[in-house]
Image 1 (cartoon, rainbow, N blue to C red):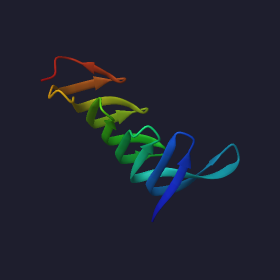
Image 2: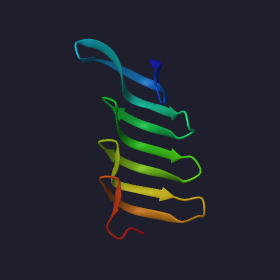
Image 3: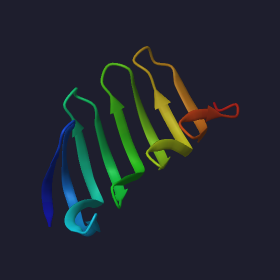
Image 4: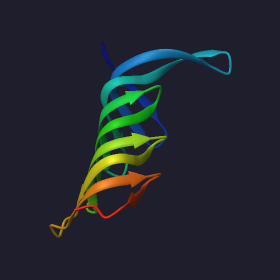
Length: 102
């Protein structure tokens, strides 16, 4: 079932689960869905236990990243496309480009 979860910086719409945080049962982002930030940025893809795993992150007016995530950072294989047409296709580690890429 798809649900909406509101956050201070935006909202999520997609698959959800439940988990205990500080002794309180809370809804979690878990499965496929989209996170919408108030500034217009978006993430669409797979989320496990509130962490992005793989998908598309659009930073409005700056770049679009499609690839893998770890601990909410670009990590693993990914492709970043910029408004001027430049593309970096390669590996990322902890949010930064890693290696030569194409």
